Image (tube, rainbow, N blue to C red; front, side, top):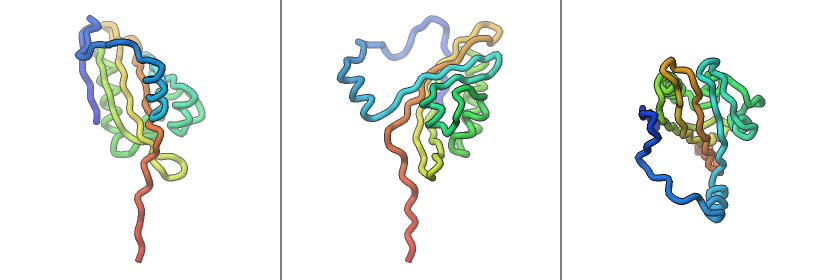
Length: 146
């Protein structure tokens, strides 16, 4: 799933914010997933991700370029995510994508990304959002032998 929605700078969303999450809701969310913030500068293309997000992406440094970040994702999603980031680097937009990360032990870790870009008329600005990592890796496909 890859979604880009251009938006005006008026701050209007299609979903009301509602009341803040209660502590019980936050604990429930933390039971099922890990949420990690990230940001990127459109001028230099450097992403700053949390140490936990870097670890979950299989990286040791929490500063990286877009290509290094995308290379940790499933091969079939590379081009779509690259095109998504190129689009949101040109026009203020909201976006989301879902993919998976190949882990060192052969499992895949699902990851969802939701974010927005805030750019001026010269496409200078920031892109930022959150990664959402469900706390269950996808299982390896079972191979049956006879």
